[in-house]
Image (cartoon, rainbow, N blue to C red; front, side, top):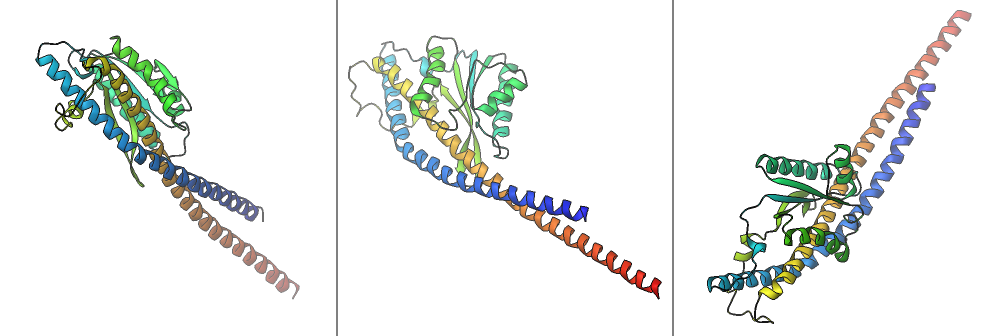
Amino acid sequence: MANLKNIQRKIKSVQNTGKITKAMKLVSTAKQKKAVDLAKASEMYAAKLQDVLARIAAVVKKFELSGEHINSRYFNKEGVKNVEILFVTADKGLCGGFNAQTLKKTRAIYKELLSEGKNVRLRAVGRKGVDFMRFNKISVVDSVVGLSSAPTYPKAAEVISKAFEDFTNGTIDNIVLVYNGYKNMITQEMRVISLLPISEDVIADAADPVSSLTTEPDHPGEILDALVKKYVEFNFYYALIDSLAAEHSARMQAMDAANKNAKQMVFDLTLEYNKARQEAITTELIEIISGMEALN
């Protein structure tokens, strides 16, 4: 009977765990929908901001061709020696390989840049990434906890402004953003984005960039700093939203798999319990029959 009680205790424990994983899946489903809706609502603004930046970049090129100098460090990829990797992980676990994929990609980029002779530093967003780097004794220039689970534009702007300032004063030459983004309900996708210098692909996207653009003041270099800063801030904020949607999607899958495993374990334990109970009953019957035969 002691064995039967032990199996019953296991069944109850697994059933309780199954209830928890089911509840966590439902919570992540609701949060994931909100994050996806927010990301979709931000896409139009991001596209328009990119279009305006591309047009300004085209005007900058026009001025340079005419002999007027504008600081175009924001678009210059030559002479990159100092690189900052800004990577985003979740503040919580229980989301499958979501965080592990980001950390694996970050370390691969880190090693690749070092092998190229570049100076590399790390900036971590998310408790899981911060804890991982601390455990492996890898230094980070800055660590932020609490932002990836509840991103806000002011906080995102505050975090990225430190890296932006280091780029503008020449401390670093390249800012690389690494995070696990949302592709669909069942798939996450690693994203590696060069925030600064801005990719030529962004500049090339502007259609008829010069003819329809009017700037105040006349010299576009005076608004370039503010526009690029806004572009970097919003792209980082959008990355946080995208990462959060992917995190909840990954947690939904992980909790769904855990719930299915819990059900299978309950089934297997119930089968084991029934077999053990049947064996106990059979043993008791044999003992009774043996006793009766002994009396006769």
